[in-house]
Image 1: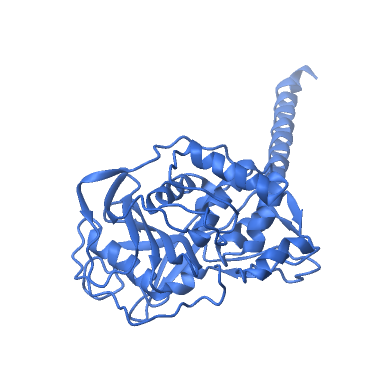
Image 2: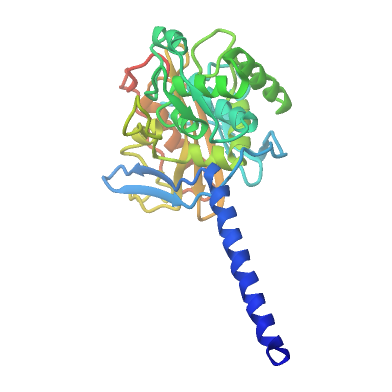
Length: 372
């Protein structure tokens, strides 16, 4: 026995290591239950028929994050320019560099306008900061849909009686701009939409938003539901620093969990991604889809009163900076996208693009809902 002491000790040590590895594996599996593990696949198509794609690996998040302290308002750059693009229809505009907190160009930065479904950026931010777990669920009720149907609001496709996890509601609110998903998040996070709207306005005050007020979680028109491009820039910036919000806003498609009401789940596709079809940022001005600047994600919005609104993130590998552009009250959906490209092409640092006139011929929108 004495002669085998070292051997026995080695055997015991080996058994301990095996046990620890096994326990660690179990912990990792259990921790992964609450993870939103999506790969960002925000894809847009080029003007010339090619495809622009920005694909990055998403950081795993097991539980909703605590709000991060970030510098809120961006300051005007020393060389700030007033938006000046021939044929421009947006009533307000802003483009900013999120890495040095400067506003590069813009117009009517603090004019109150209706944000339409850009509201849902704040909705998912407040939801992520207040729900307990992304696996928490909400069961839809018939009354959840009454007002949304009356307003002809855009929907993700959830149904009365359907039990849906928070992570599916987040994607449902952003990708297809689902007002049903926004209501589900509000009820899950605060018990009612009214209580959730109170949280939204409290968060707006915490962020120093002096020209923003919310009356609902989805962006349905209300005279007292308003914001500015400057305030939306702040919301976009804070959402960018929330891992889950950033992932959702930068995702092209997503399939929800299977339920009795939706046996195959719901395949959600991004409205913004669809509207970017045929466009790319031609920063170098060569007419080809080979530039360093790529649209990563964002959100669109539309109501009859707000017209077309759009907020996007754009990453430029040449500068290694991320930029945000927000436009409000554009004449048409098509022009909101075209004008976004023109903003990036004209005002990104080092741009050599020759900005064409913005087309003003189209007078209809691509959306079929009054609120999207």
